[in-house]
Length: 210
View 1 (cartoon, rainbow, N blue to C red):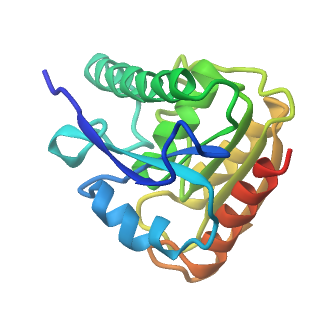
View 2: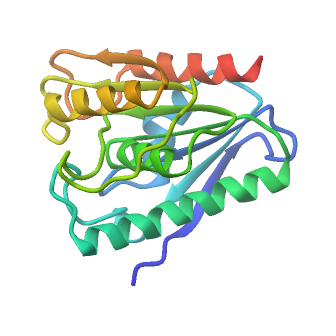
């Protein structure tokens, strides 16, 4: 049984931050990769960043677009519980601080599943190249997100998250009553673009002043 590891802490101290941000890495990646590719490119101040660390560099073994199996459900539940523990710890360290949960690729998918199971919360969600885990035929959780701000991105050329999976995620978020912004970035490879960094930065700034 995989046990996920201690996260990487960056930015402001959680007890003093104006915003808490949990940003989840993708498959085969690490918190350090997310620091290099995403967090280190932000100009926002006053944010405590917590970057979770997956055992074996993966939150679950299957591809997100595959039918859910008992093994995948177990891995997914374990990863969701780990993220929930991080969010709970942040809330204890500074009560009522807005929280942004986000991620890239598999991390974006995990964040979306977290919202559909435990959302909404005071803050926002950012899913950079993400979709629901499983297929539309699978029994999956669904939450009323009650106008929580969400930023979802995708690409027509992404090899891991096809356009139809991205579109299904956008439809699901709309049905969940999220306040949703979507960007489709033509020809973008499986990476985080400057446009997506700006979108994340805007989301962090918006919840900081509310």
